Image (cartoon, rainbow, N blue to C red):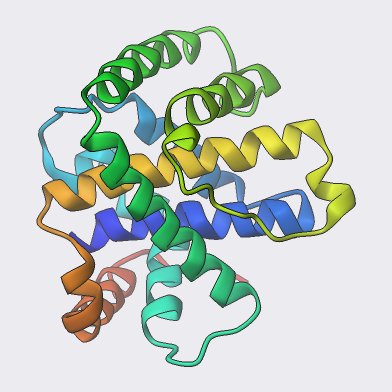
Length: 209
């Protein structure tokens, strides 16, 4: 469950970084984008969903700790929390809409085929992923208002990548729900989730600064 929530937080943090700086950690971006190729009714648990590598979710796990361990939030952390809650809310809208789920499944299969022809960093893939979010998820509302630097947010590639990572967050929220996650966990089990995130982080290889 904690890994699934880390997927949501990772997507939110990526969106925040893209909106403010026009770039984000590549390994985390790749991990989140590739998670979209996992079938909607796939099995194997959260680790399989993220390619079987906890280290690929380091950015998200660190974000879980920051978000859940900081009572009074402002600035970047407040944005990340707002985006995370927004994606969780959108997930509920999507999963309750039979047509949206059917359309999403079909479009994600197409995306998986595109990945075989375009690089994970390609603008074509980012645009295709963003269009899934724009066409299927966003219209169900409420829309997530992204805060950042205006000149950066006017860049079409940044816009596509922000929408792409928001889609990965909604998809991670689906996984989180399947693992038993929900708003009650955020209210009453924050401490347990932080401890689990710290345990996961302690088992990951050290990264040189």
